[in-house]
Picture (cartoon, rainbow, N blue to C red):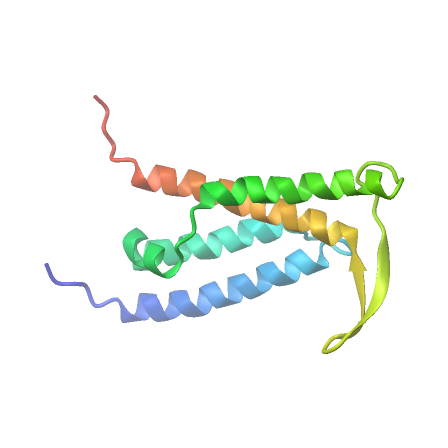
Length: 145
């Protein structure tokens, strides 16, 4: 079987997926001060990965991106729960938010907030759940028995 000539689709997908991933990272980091955060950033990242799966196929992309998304879910949940429990360690209320400014080598003076850690947990959980659902539907053979 010959492969179709889909150079335009592959080129456009590479560009569009790069733009979507860049925007998802922006949304992720803007989340604790502006609209965005882990949920919408995770959905955007999953959308970019799904676009690549649709263009390149499941087998090809699993060679490039060998991630079992079912393991990403508990990692994200553990990070989110750890941020809530971490507030008890410091004698604060559950899921309380704190921040400080740090001098980072390349970025200069930067605000780092505990909300970013919670958003990371949400981000990973959303990617894991979304990709698990979509790949489960895509791998369904359509057997109706």
